[in-house]
Structure formats: C-alpha cells, structure tokens
Image (cartoon, rainbow, N blue to C red; front, top):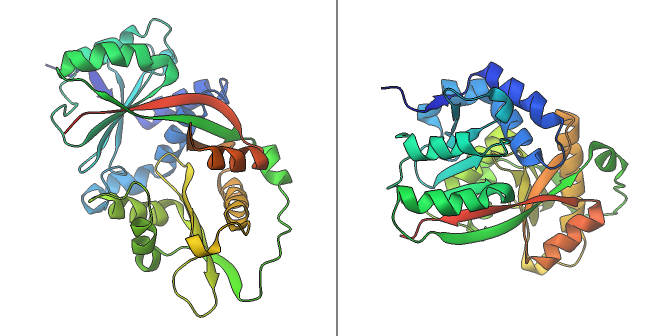
Length: 294
C-alpha cells in the first residue's frame, strides 16, 4: 500500500515556492527552507551516503492526494538528531492531520526526536503527537522568526574600522568546524557533522587575528539558509564584532541568493533580539520545537 506521504518532486517544490512567495514575510521560514533544498538538490541527492550530517540528509514530502496549493509539507532527515518539520497553509489542516495519522515513514521511536512547527500548527501538534506516541512531549524551545528584507540588507552600512591585526575571511570546514562546535550552545554527539556540512554547503565568515588559525568570532548557515551559530569568544565581546560579522554575512548571502533572509531567535534571548532589531530585523512569526523525552 502506498504511504500517505509522497516525496516532493522538484517541480512540486518550485510550485510551493511560488505560492509561499506571495505570503512573505510570514512564511519566510518555509519559503527559504524549500529554496535551500532546491539550491542544493543535486549535491544532496547525489551524495547522500557521504553526507556528514543527518540534518542535511533530508527529504521533503507532501500529501500524496492533497491539493498542492495547500503547501502541506513534512520534512524528514537521516540519522542522529531526528527532526520532523510540519507545515500547511490549509486552514482546516486536514491534509497535515491525515499525514501524521497515517504515515509509516516517520520514525516515531527515534532518539533524540524533535518536531518543528509554525505557531499556527501548535494546537494540531498537541493533539496529534500523543496519538502517535503515547508520551508527554516537551515544548523544547519557542523561537521568533526574525526577517530582514533585501532592501534593508543592501542599505546596511559597514563602516566599522578593525584593529590592524584583525581581518575577516571565509570559514573552512576542516580547519574551523571543531572550534565552532566546541563553543556551540547546542553541541551534541552529532553536531560536529552539522557544523562541517553547513560550512561546506553554505559557507560562513570568521573574524581572525593575524598569525592565529582559529576565529575570534564567526557566523554560518544551517540547512534552512538561516544565518546562525553566531558566537564571539568571551575575551573579544562588547567590541561590536558580532554585529559586524552578521552584516557582512547578510550581504554575502544577498549577493549569492538575492532573498529576504531570516534567523531563529529564542524568545527570551534579549541580547540577540536587541542585535537583530538594531540591524533592521522584524518578527515574522514564531515556531515551536517539540522534543520527545528520552
């Protein structure tokens, strides 16, 4: 029997992109996620056995018999951190409900397991997740989707003057991934692969001191094409380096993709919220991560 979930073709994903484009900025997370997957489509699908990160070894599915205009979408990834993204524009959410109720493709027993959904899907998730796995799911993280338009990125002024011994350069996965992973708040047993793959696929920038091999400050992009992993070494903080490296990265991504961009910002992270607002970001919507208890 055919599963209710059907892996999306490139044409289906392009159609979803066109539909979601009309609903920006609210749907920017889903729009840029699909764009990122299509941008790396050949690289991902031709080399799945060599991917270092389960989060990059992802596939996008829709309702096999659904209306494509609903943009019902479920993403499943490979190994390690098992993350399921759920989304639909359908007001009744019946397509998504049926997908969650009937599919046999989601590995509900995977550990660890996270489910991401837009704030509009939260009630459905609270209803459906316990039905598929009779446990109390944790609301792991509530995050704002902060977006910035192409016009605002282009208008950002980069007039900071660095000390003569500092310079900005592209990150290198082999040279810098370990340092970035060691200092990442969400470091886990599989996160090094995510960091390496993200640099290899999307690149990133670091602030370096001449004569030293490891960056003092850095930023890179995950599989959602979302600038993140922003970090400044404690000894170098409060010097404006984080804002500088983010502006430079936004401009680099604008040149590559010509898109409005977004980031995930934990709701209670006031320092990060302040930085994003200073650069011109606004809140598009919120998302929730549900976590299955170990």
